[in-house]
Length: 142
Image (cartoon, rainbow, N blue to C red; front, side, top):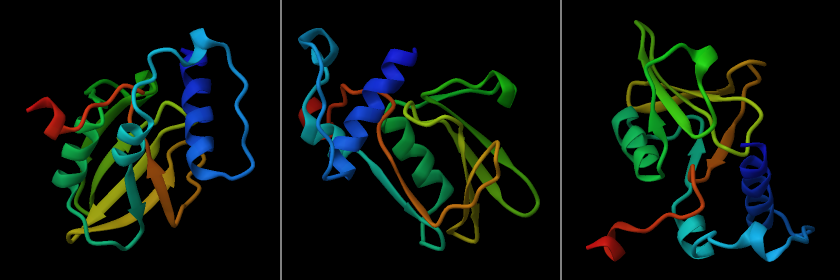
């Protein structure tokens, strides 16, 4: 599982940074799928932006994140969970390249807050990439 996290971190870095060179064996990069599909499947988040929790949850499911209903302590990379409170509705998502899950809090049709779950460090924005490297757009499936 750690190897998969490293593969996702490397892939994400190639897309987001100009100063990255990846040195890997063929077996490390075999079966990664099309880079454009992976890049186009990402979900760009910005605090305060207009987006519904339902649309975000559906997008994460299309990005192959698995729903879980267990305790947050049992959550693993590539999973997500939905919770509701009086103030907001939250999606907890753990991208495979992150060290800890992210909490996306929605209120009144907007992304109200974005933070790292364990450290509670607020973020203004983030890009969430698919849970697996091999993603296929809906158009290609049909």
